[in-house]
Length: 170
Image (tube, rainbow, N blue to C red; front, top):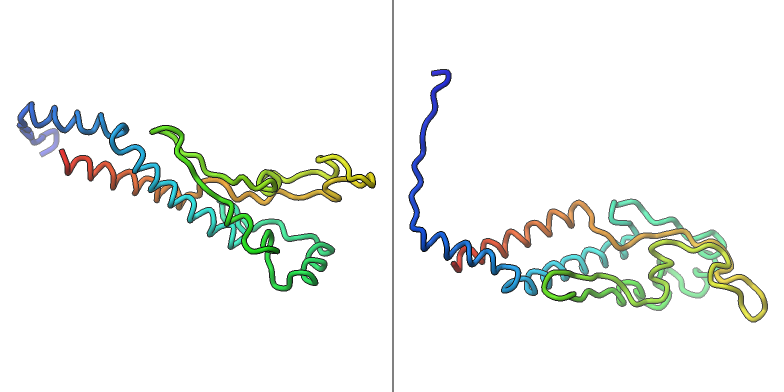
């Protein structure tokens, strides 16, 4: 019948509800570090995977090496990809750390990390002893840090898991 509605009665014990709310409010303090570590491990794995596949967080392939550099690299390190001349330099130097109980930092201490992420113009780092520009040519950005849509979905799933565990313990 148009305009009709059903009613639902909800009853609960105030003490139980208060205990559950207290548990959820303490969630960040109690579970924050474990939640952030799980998120950090997931983001670390995802970022390394993207670096291996040479794509940015949006799935866009990195700019290829210049023909000249690719040819010179092929002679010295046959079959190696970008940043793989001496192993997986970028992937091996990626890490995360907790910043207190409420923040997570993911990045690299590799000196070329910022150059990889943002690119660098010819000569932006000065000149060599012989007066040549450093770098000797423009280096295009090849972003590796960031959160993809898939990462965001996985972060929400991890948060949901931790919240459900907190509720189950209440």
